[in-house]
Length: 374
Ligand SMILES: [Zn+2]
Image 1 (cartoon, rainbow, N blue to C red):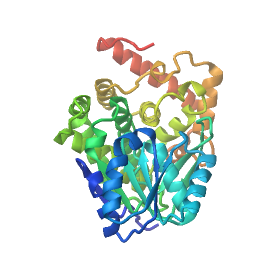
Image 2 (image 1 turned 30 degrees about the horizontal axis):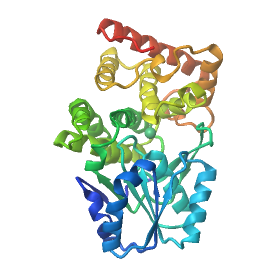
Image 3 (image 1 turned 120 degrees about the vertical axis):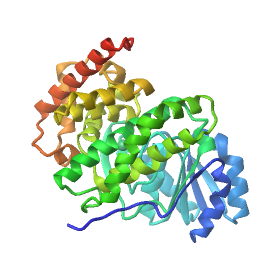
Image 4 (image 1 turned 30 degrees about the vertical axis):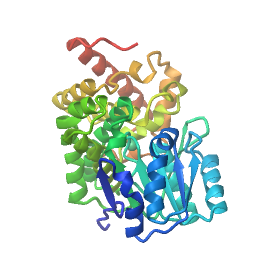
């Protein structure tokens, strides 16, 4: 097995970096017309800047308003619009699902893709894969592409205006990176690109975790004040670049598989990817029988930034046996990344670990005087 490391061709991050979007695209040899697939808040915040930045660089462009779900039907709608416009590049601007949709459409049409995340809520922007959902929001499949985005451009001034809960969700997604990477590397399994993980990818995953612990709380405070600070800058890099490179070049394990399992129950649909992944991290730590000190470090961090540590905090306060089995079955479906764990994982073990993680979270809350969410 060869060592494979992958990344976007370019990553640009900074305050008001959207003003450089057109120039960056031209520098990379990309040409118009461009189709900008954008979420509502991206359209409100950035339309004028796109006009300036893309206009100055000579790009004709049209904006497609994202329909809300990264589903097969939505991807087809974007492709139709791109064909009608004879687009030569697709720019995704918005949250993870917008970017996933833009990447899926670009891959199908064999077009270059630019990702401009307006929130730091997941590790999706840098990756060469999309998570496809049904129109109702249940996990359907991963789609893996030949190459990573041509450009990922992160405007921290825009991120600073995003809802705090989304930054926290991004921390939940990033929280999984180091634990899943380590499990995959220790087990010698293939990474998301089918190769062996590199020392570089593992080092980036560990750095990601260290930045979360050090800067997570301060970054959240900066976001609440809507002003970029060095801590927010570092945290956005951890959530977006380090988490993305770490998971893709090292691999996923139980945490993300449990996330996929949780989406099988509609009660969790109003919670973000990273929130469910954070709960998946606790389940992974239980499955792997990690030392209590490490579990406490994670519980402490999660509580400080407001990530869920109990079933009630992801909508499963009234978890029935049937729901529990449904989640466990989906988490351990054939091909799931839970099978990257170094031991055989059966549905029954996941069902038990889901309850055990909840008990740990509730006990920790009781011992630290945290009022329990309903
Ligand atoms: Zn993720």
